[in-house]
Length: 137
Figure 1: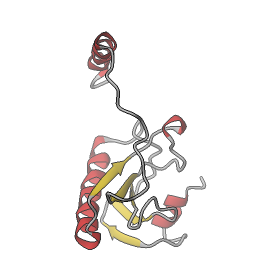
Figure 2 (figure 1 turned 45 degrees about the vertical axis):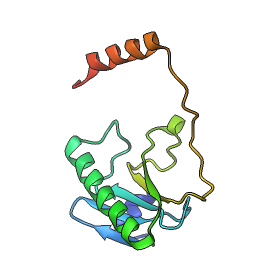
Figure 3 (figure 1 turned 120 degrees about the vertical axis):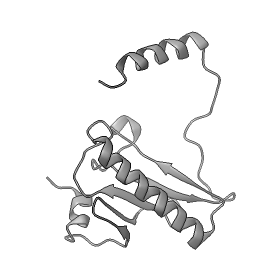
Figure 4 (figure 1 turned 90 degrees about the horizontal axis):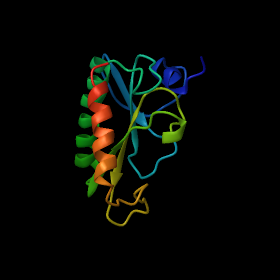
């Protein structure tokens, strides 16, 4: 397996690590959307949100919150995006589960990836029904 994030975790690839604990590692993104853009990953190789167990996901989220708070204190952004992509259709390019913690400023050039528009209530209700049927499977 050639996973750059696993190589970083194992100390075989260079990275600016900003936080680590027994379950997670956080390091600077080498292709940052904004200054301070940080990635938070589980130490265990897990492909995406469909493969991660809830305990590991919770550990990654706890670390992401800790990193977001440190970014706020250090860089004083106007906000922060926590972003996670699972699957190529969702723009995942490194197949090791991770969160992007992206500091945001009012005058930065980043844009919302979709334009919010009202959905048809019947479509929303049908999707909700199908999701409810599959929760916990």
